[in-house]
Image 1: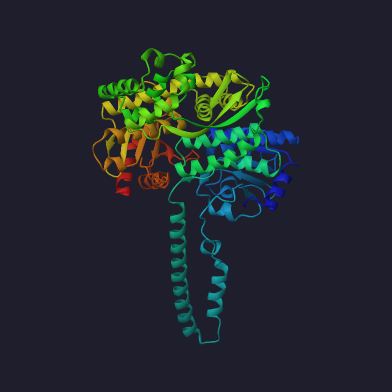
Image 2 (image 1 turned 90 degrees about the vertical axis):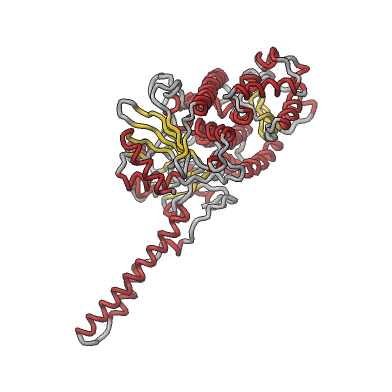
Length: 564
């Protein structure tokens, strides 16, 4: 279902009902949720919000609320499985699914009554044709019955029926094999479509209810996909271009108005900024050391790498004292041409992509944030390992930090994000220096042991994925083995020591031409099936699983033989 008049009218119907919102635990989902909440508030729609971090929580939430609600909105969950089979809803229950996970389950695509998919018109879903996968078996049975009708003698008739049945079985097997092949090709790789926050903003725009706050949330949702490496650079740049037109429309001001901005106003601006994590809220030195791109390219885990960093800073002519103090405290004269100075020196050190297209937001006169700052802060709040009240506390905190009235929560998130980035870089350095990344043939493998510093942080899926991507980038820069540079990575970390489980994530190879498609989801399923490994496929990303520690070696052996 695309964004045409019919869909918008169907969604307007939703605005007349009581709605249950089921929202996944990722930054893009939170941003999409904020946009939808703002739309609901415009029209005084009653809704209940339930955070869900996996399939088990989704099923539980549905069972608890199915008697009170008939309308369910699923954000960043539900598209890549057969929802009706999993949830077994009544016929008068309706699901609106806004999910960037691909591929979308074919049953969800072709169900025209209970499931409404919110998808941008230019998103190519590449779904197999209806007639190719839903053959009408009843027609085939009728054909075979018609063929076996006649008035021949009973012996001949019996032989004829046997031949017919044999031919029909052959035909049926051939068709089911053909359908399996089509579905295998379609479902083989997991990837991501347009950010859900962008889809929600598009909806608000079509309803003429789009606001600057909603636009900012759409920008943060897209930036989350880029920070988490879920989409290609081409897709990112294309979507940035779409949002840039909206930014110009919403933030167009005359010079006179520019001087009379109120202290609580909000302004979004396009930036061609540095690809340095949180640098405006940190010191430039810390940011260079803890950004994946610079750390991997300069090989900062080695003594030689540290020397290269000193040379890089000297080439820019930046005194160490200035670089190591808070960015806000640096000399204004140095900050004026900083981006150009860094870019010029970076290209000499093989870092040609140190600047990136993005957006910034200004709250009043003082507060300025880049979209990536918000992504890091919100993700850190959501996966905070500091125990405070019920499990949903982190989700609510992260959601609140996206509102401009909650700057204290946002700053708390920025502090947590700095700790997380330091922990990631220290773990990457440790893994590379102690040769923990080993080639298993068709993939690289790295396992964190219980007792590793910050290991509790990496029992969380988003943190573990970020660590895996940083580690693979660094490993590709450090290894001399050309074959290993082209391999994907599987990473494992302790999940629950008492239960004896590990969390495992698979990520695609780190190549410039990478299409970001991930085959580990299906491979994990097959390997678990063939070895009877005790696994839990509870995450909305199929390439993340939980596994019993003692089943790990047989599971990995099966994966190696499956992918070799």
